[in-house]
Every structure is written in C-alpha cells, then in structure tokens.
Image (tube, rainbow, N blue to C red; front, side, top):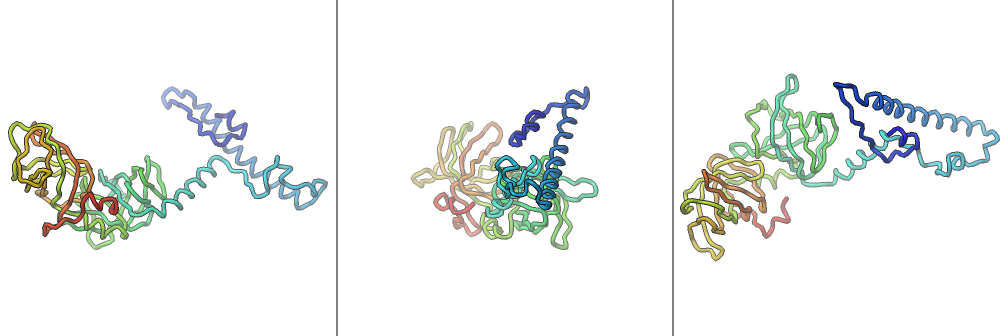
Length: 312
C-alpha cells in the first residue's frame, strides 16, 4: 500500500488487516495514514511554489507549466485519493437525482436514545438525500403518512445520500401533528417520494391473484382456505376466494397442481407489485408462485402482468 502511494498510483484501494487485540499491523496502518496526509500537504506546497514562481517570472517564465509538471495540462489538477472519492460521490449523486420513482422496502425500526424513530431498509429504486420528504405506508387502514429524513447512515457511517441497491437507516420526523411511534411501522411497509405516492396508493390492495404451484398438501385446497403469505417483506394470512385453471374453470388444488388463486389479506391492505414471487404455507402444506393481478375494493383489476413493465 505504501509503495503504491509513493508511486502516485492513486487508483488502488489498499486493504490492511489489523488487530485491536494484538496490535498486528497497526504500525503499517499509521504509516499509511501519515503518508496520505503528507501526500496531500506536499501537493498543496508544490502548487503554492509553482504559483509563486509563475508570478515572479524567473528564468523558467517562458517555459509552460505543463512541461514543469511532466506533460500534464495546466487545467489538470493533482487529485488525492480522498478527493477522488468525494468527486465520485458527487458525480453519482447527480446521476442518481434523475432516477424515478423512489421505493424503499422497510425491514426494521429502531429507537436510539435521544434520536427518535429510525427506520432501516433497502432502496429498490431511486435516490434519497437528507431533508427529503417521504411517504411511508400502507398503515392498517391503507393510508400513507409524510415524514422528513433528518439523517442517513450507511454501514454505520453518516452520509448525505443513499442510492439504489444500498441498505441504509434513516432518522425521520413526522410532518403532521401526530407523533411517530415504533408501533406505526412494520415489515412489508415501503417509503416513496411525493412523485410516486399516487402510484403507490394504487398498488395498496387487499386482493391479488397469483399463479401458484402446490408443492405439498395432504388433501385438497378449496375456497376459504387461509394459508400464511410470504411476499417480499409482507408476512400476513390471506383467505382463498377463488381457484381456477388456466382455462378459467373453477377447480380445487392438490399436490402438484398449477392453478390461478385469488387471495384476500385478512388483516390489512399491503403494497403488492405484479410479478413478485411469493410463498404460502400452513403446517406441512406449502406452495410458491408469482403475482399476476391485483384488485381494488370494488373487485376491478388494478394492474396485471400485461402492464407490469409500466409500473415500478
């Protein structure tokens, strides 16, 4: 690592294994950190000396600065490793700002002393920044409530932004008169921005249809059967309201059957996306499949596989 820095090969990111118990390689880590500081200081000093010599216009005044720096153009700055990382993050933030819609799948809630409510989740799509307004839901009544992001932590490190594919925790505050409580949050909830709220509300449903394969059941499955559904972060029981074959006929399902089943959540509406894989189980019975359609309270299809590509 030190040889790379001495050779000005700033494209490398060294890994130094250390032990806080035995102190192994701590001297190497300290030497590397000192070298980083020295490299940046020497760079600043060299720029200062070069600027001073240009102003005085000595014997080297007719020589272009690019020649004195080994051929680099006058507009090319010397970038240290830390400055390079900062520039990469700034560039990524500019690109991520164009990504819509935003969707964060929540998986945990924390209440650190003196901080308030902190939610954790994976950013499936979009970009989040400190101060951004989000809508979290659905609640047990199918509603979405606004919150503001106070701070962001990624891998236990404070950050101003978080991007697609990253897991992060968000300290939030309520934007209404109702105080936030830990009981307001559960697995299966999502957070979206205000541009995605209308679409998220459309996907908040109680009923959905899935193309399932029954892996095992000791007898037959008919209407009224209520297995436990695992769908992304959703964990909830649902009642079967309809079973039909690919030809559209009313049938019963048994081990090995491939059928279309319409489920209705028993407790509260959920955010359901078409095309998502799902698993259902009850005792030794189990099966798997994917979501094909979702329905509103009137029974009309809200979305299907035909228009899934235009949704999320």
